[in-house]
Length: 118
Image (tube, rainbow, N blue to C red):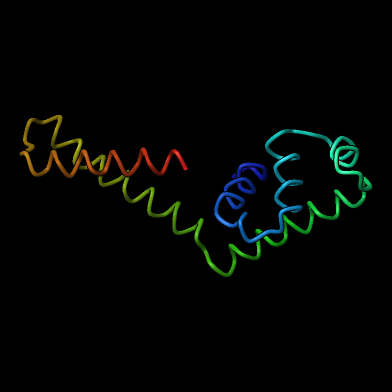
């Protein structure tokens, strides 16, 4: 997984565990695509301080994931749900699906849509 994508996913799960300042700097750098210099000017801190905070945040997010494994479980569960959807969809394409199975398929599609929006 790309480092930026991985870090933003980790931030989605663990960002609330960071201080407000850490959250703001992370968002300015990764979400708003500001440079270290731009962030330092906006927050009236040194460029080195911004860099140090970003490195600390990266380490914190990585360590949270090593301990809690929420992102790992999320990704595994999402893949398992996709597999289940594929199997049920194959029945749907063969016209061998009943109402209950169709309800399950719709439920799985709703779960996948909700997971994609987070």
